[in-house]
Length: 630
Image (cartoon, rainbow, N blue to C red; front, side, top):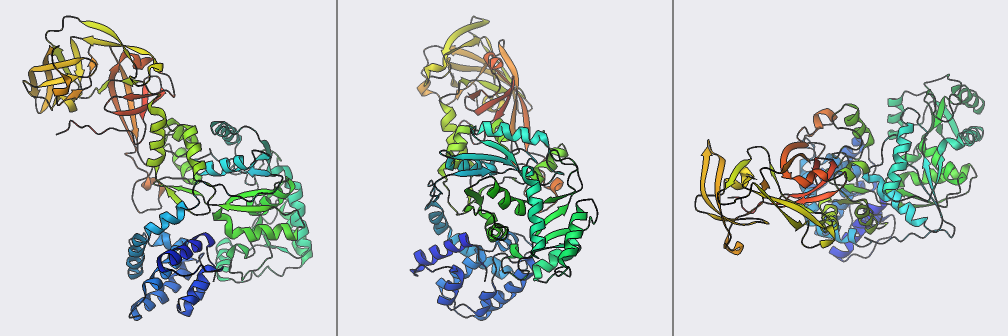
């Protein structure tokens, strides 16, 4: 049995807190299975099942659920735990065509019942950074220069920076694949580090050690711990999944050495180099992984010196050791590869490095795959890596998220190994709290179907008054508010009014509706009479307005999710074509003076960030409900 330790720890928590079972020892699921008398086929469980292996196991589970007359609540929850711990099951069970609908119903029911325990478990270590670190701290943050940093990178960058605050931090560019890496992405990552206010680090590259990594590969071949392999890729993948030895596994050392060296001359392009570990290991990361492969593209640093390049999994432990890293922080998606990491260091006789796993942060309805983001950028479906629909640091900054708020929120999640999915509304709520007191207030209305109004007894074409930009924060200063005989109202507000109504124009006073003109269901014009003695407390409608003679025109953008809800792997079909909406608005003339990155509140509408002069983006989760709607 092979289990996902982090998920298995939750199952222990569930069984202990819900069913008063004593804490099991590792391997958790195996011991819980014995304690609860589950059938023997549970011993065949593997949290890293292939799809085919999973289906064979689910057939047995389906038969068991049908044949067993009474299953205790504890057993049901333990079976749920097995399913919950299997990554491929949790993905497949969401699909409509999932074959085992009886198991899907069983799982989804228990998932809802156990949500409470999941929340409790995930909150246990939230906000704590409990990492037993070596005395001399050297950490590394190793992004690949194949794209901009996205929000999924932030936790790794911040945790490494936090742990290295009294030690050293290395920013290492993983440049083991020259097909993907570009200098412009390195420059972008350096700028992104500034956004996170991470400044004290040493820059290195994996390519700094290509010579040594190549020597390590030769060493493994000479020790009969690596072999060249020209098995077709699909066949190799199947053999690894099925635990079948490659036909090339017992190639003589001398032959392996000859072919490997010739590979670096551009020959034998169908070959790769594999570590000879254990092709039958339960942990499939140990099943003779590929450690070198032909790329055949000029490298930005080493030029044409190499035709073959190490894989990340092979290079990483070697370079960590050579660079003096003492604490390697890795997301727990790499946990299965930790034994592989340690195997390389041990057999290459290199200095050991302490590994600490932490959970990656998952975000609702968010695309974090650089491959997918690059597809949308390259196909001009978005405006670039900083498009507000893209969850890069640049993108979410353009969308109005303050970087200090983001960093504080991420660090509050701590270094927990428990996987969690973050709802964006919590981050944006913290962001709104931060920007609220710093954002001047302005009035604006939509240009489309705008309603022209006349104030009959107002004798000035325009009259300026100095008013506070925000009543709660006098430090923001004053602005000039223009009152005029002609004003604009939003159609959405105007249609609420009837002849004889008394309403309040905000920052002005009360008005009485003398007359209104409606054509084809749309309000076209309203005649008001100012009522200086009116009391705003008595009016139902308190409306925003804009001078009809002193105003500015500007664009407003509202962004939604990058992808739609279609169940498809086709990225083009998955693209949400309704993810950007644009409107033209009329607003107070001082809005034209605002510069990039300034935030404002358009009263009764929401908070906005200036993307460029006269262009604004609605900041998510700040759109205000219009109380005056019928």
